[in-house]
Image (cartoon, rainbow over all chains, first blue to last red; front, side, top):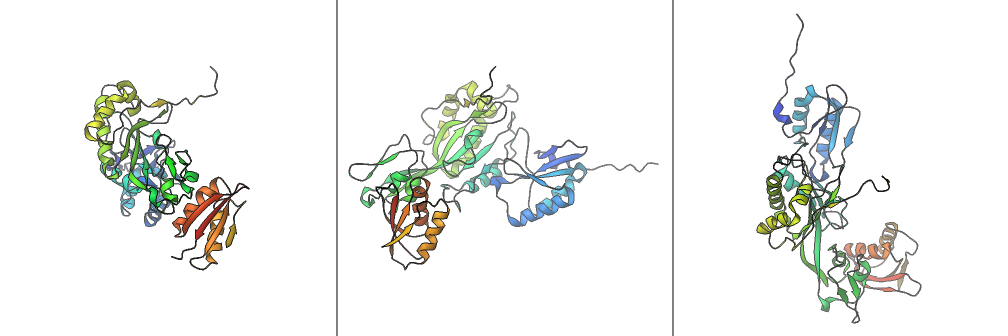
Length: 316
Length: 75
């Protein structure tokens, strides 16, 4: 009699995805959940141990800040999940769900950071990770400042840290450092040797506040600039502006409000992303929905996400 | 007046050289730091401010470079 061994796997582990089939028979990539790309050193050590025991000769760092274990045999799924769990490391998601948020280092140690993107990424991961959208994937990114290393506008919702500067003229010593530091040209020195501020070119980077030797420039408000409807892939879209100076503690609620709209409006249209849904429904429809709950942060008007041509240079 | 000439030195070497030069000075000494236009004049002053020094003024001189005046502050 043949010794038939039935493979047992806890299918609950697979619910949120994160186990991705590879080319080889029986082999899978296991994508780990690393919100904001921050990884504690003890956890990193444990992952290395698990990779060494169950995986191939290397791990892969995904483009969205996750560590992916390569060449995991599906028969080892339970053991991998259990051993990672000893370091409270969880598996990530794939498919039509809210994905793990990405974020830059934020403001704790990066001198450019204006907001705590790491805190935001952790909070959103905790509250919304894996939420089924019913339609397509849903990506969120947090950039700590307008330099925007995470390319926030290429996400379904992209957040960008911002401060609005205000000047105390009496404290100004006319040194000119702010005007010199202002890359977009929103500040020039006036005839009275004090800086003159123009709102339109200002991207709210806060460089004037950071360089000001006397504190004459300070923050009038701080929060996130929010762009919605971006994506990359075969048909890229750049997300457009829907909210400004959204307070950090309202981010999760804001995303949930957008998700609510997306779930409803994409119903019956198949596998469609948020950006394409906004293009079909019109930007005003989403803007009005958001204004109901976030009247003080929603912008007065905006346009739908914009198509980015990727085949530039090809003549057809 | 102490002069720290960082012309022709790019970021972040200029900032690190400024730190080393400022280490040699007594607390409260006023120094002039010569910086090129562009990235150096945008970056170095705010990094020195973050290190706790007191920025006094910034002037562009005829030759095109900038002179940053600051007071060395020991933390």
